[in-house]
Amino acid sequence: MIPSDRINLHFTGDFHAIAAAHNLLAALLDNHIHFDNALRIDPRRILWRRVIDMNDRALREVVTGLGGRGQGVPRETGFDITAASEVMAILCLAGDLDDLRARLERILVGLSYDGEPVRAAQLRAPGAMLALLSDALWPNLVQTLEGTPALIHGGPFANIAHGCSSVIATRTALKLSDWAITEAGFGFDLGAEKFFDIKCRSAGLDVAAVVLVATVRALKMHGGAAAGDLATPDPLAVRAGLANLEKHIENIRHFGEVPVVALNRFAQDRDDEIAVVRDCCDGLGVPFAVSDHHARGGRGGVELARALMAHARDDQPYRPLYALTASVREKILTVARKMYGAGAVAYTKRAEQDLAEVERMGHADLPVCIAKTPASLSDDPRRHGRPDDFELTVRAIEIDAGAGFLVVLTGEIVRMPGLPRRPLSERIDVRDGEIVGLE
Image 1 (spheres, rainbow, N blue to C red):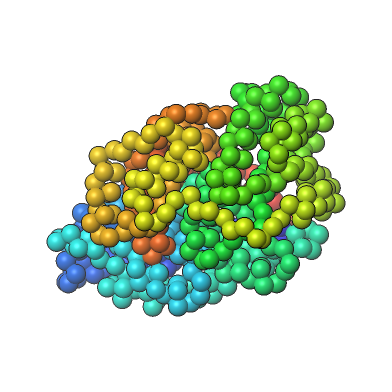
Image 2 (cartoon, rainbow, N blue to C red):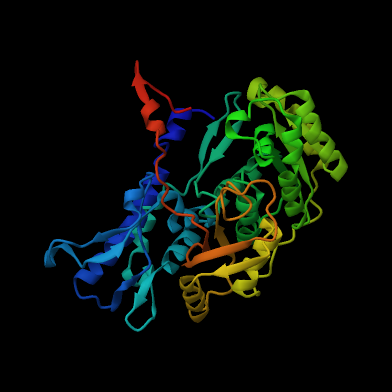
């Protein structure tokens, strides 16, 4: 996509607008408590954290309001990354400006001393938040290197949020073209499950086909190959990793869909390795195509395009994975068993308390947005392949009433990532007026 440097950095400022609107609500909340606290908000039960568009583990847990009476009320809080903001999810799921306003009004910011919910509307925050977001509500038109139009709008990570581009961008694409392709990534168990159970259900959308993307390197990893050996030809490791691919195909069929498997080919991939994947798909009765667009651009995607057009259909609506009338426990267990292969779900003490609060406040009819590692079908990033009959641990459940779902935190997943030992920033620079090192 171009302009790649702007897309990777500030782009049109949508992320800044989302962070500003989110943090404005946090500031208004603290300001209300600092003065008369007419809503009797309990500082120990504030649910609204701040956000920043930066990986910074030092901000995960902080104390604010230090320095005396004039500096606010001291309390524990923290930061999430902007992609995990409920405002991000709200922007992506809103159908129009009025829907955006209604969703902002429903945001749950905390509880009163009496245990009653306090929402953004009670702080008279949505109007100003809406003003900050009014331009960000418009999709952003860019293009591929070959001139194909593309809409980039929103960025909720699928491992910690619902992981899909905006409803408005999707509807715009459907109006402007005969074919609209949307990404719901991080594996079908994450982004695509939420695409169906949250986005499509909320917006009344459906699909003509599902494309399941695979790579030889990923299959080798799931087959047990070491990270340093993924470029070494090894058809046996590819075959050993097919169980992971087969599980994703099975997951797609739970929604009443049959995927087209697209193998993204790279320079080091050999024909005998690709043949292993093709034979597997043939045996499962699933369309298969090699996509060589990494080396050949659009010409390299013709085989996939033809396979997709031959396979696509719009006469059979998808089936949601669970009914909204099911209990929260049932929804979580259904996703854990059908998508991940878990045998059971365990709840920490905090998660049990959160579940009771969800039911007490009448939000048990919301869909679940499970936050989980993208590195494994399980909640343990070290378990590759196709884990089976494991126990999924639910650590906490958060109510995103404005977005319209429950965030279910599993395993050790965090909503504020940390930087790696050698951050990408070490390679980024400006030379001769051009930004380099972003690729």
